[in-house]
Length: 330
Image (cartoon, rainbow, N blue to C red; front, side, top):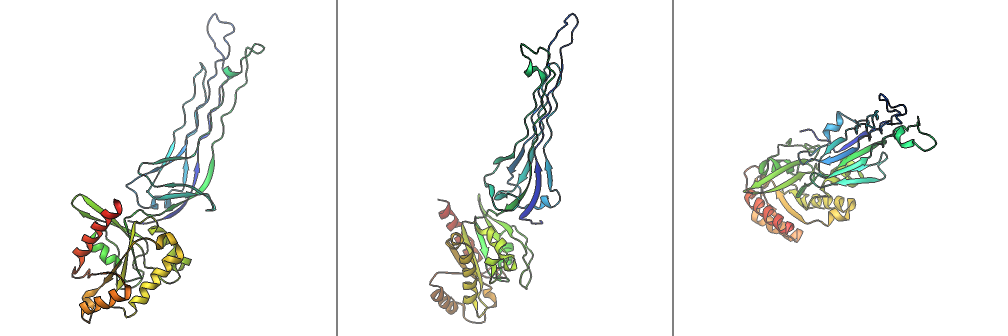
């Protein structure tokens, strides 16, 4: 699946239909009077949340969206039909900004939520509205109101229970492919993952959604390596799963680097509950139990140790994730 989390689009609501100037024409009725109908209302621009979507990629191929114009009024006091609305479907977590990204117009988070961003123009009035005691046969009618138009930005912040973070090549994508239905690109080199990937872990009738965030590097909060865009996707996560390569002699410094970037990006994100997982234990050249003691003392926290290669510790990790997710849902 291709991924896109930013899109600029043009939207326009429909113009209202014009009113009609018409007169009653029937046999034996000399002065039938006005009977021009009103114009129909222009269609609205409506955004609707679709739970089946998790990317804005469709907006790469279509950037212009216009609602239909209202039909003109007709004789015999017939009102023109309203123009059809333009319903634009977006994934949950879509924010809509003005053209220069200075004003948040709405934040769409609920399934099937609808938001009218632009209203269609009202229909014009037929000449029947302008009949008076001094003007029994008015020819006056009004044009329909113009619709609205503007450029806007769509920005997607993914919804997930868990945000999987860590330096590049910490084993995030490998873990996600091991425990979930996701198929991220995996390679033994940094920046294999170039965009967030969602994966679902299912157990009986319960499931957890994980978001694999591309590897963070020093300076990520300032946009280095597109880090600020990636960090935006963990804002809505309930908690963080922080992966650290146990075989790197600078494992602690690596852990602190990621923590610092998150703290500088957002205090709210930094305050989220964090589960620390040491990865690639199958490659460790020293006694694992002794290493665990040293690491837990250094971090002053209980941590998990796994290998996605031989599945060591994977079941314990999944058990922990489901138990903790139940606590956060209560």
